[in-house]
Image (cartoon, rainbow, N blue to C red; front, side):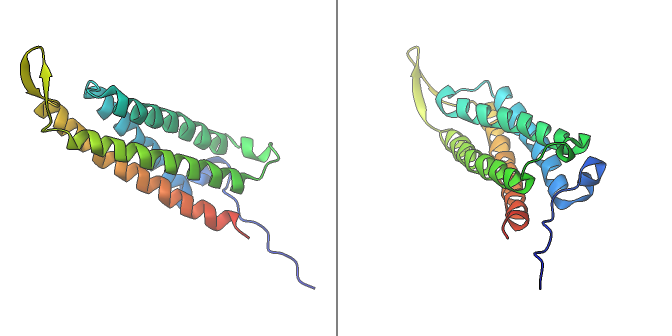
Length: 161
């Protein structure tokens, strides 16, 4: 008679920082914060596109902090839930949203040479400084998306039977 193997879940407390998943969550927080700061510092020249990037980066930053805080504080041991599934669902959702935000930020950056009429003078849509900031934001949005993708892969390995 064989028994099913016990499900492996993330450890509670500071031990989570010793796992790959914990390290990726820390990287998601750091790089996601950089995306947030860089997009905000570009003065958001295209609010329709970059508004979504700001929403996703700020929301993911706060949720990742809460996610890490729940595991660091050990609250996961007091709440009876399928944490492997919640980990997978969270990272899947944020990965999809961050991938879209990365594409929108890349689209914003690609509009650098677009000329627009601003009060009777034709000027580029993005100044050189805004362009440079948006290039950095695009790169960090890609890195953050990759971190969420790696976390998603690790969560999938823990969740699926």
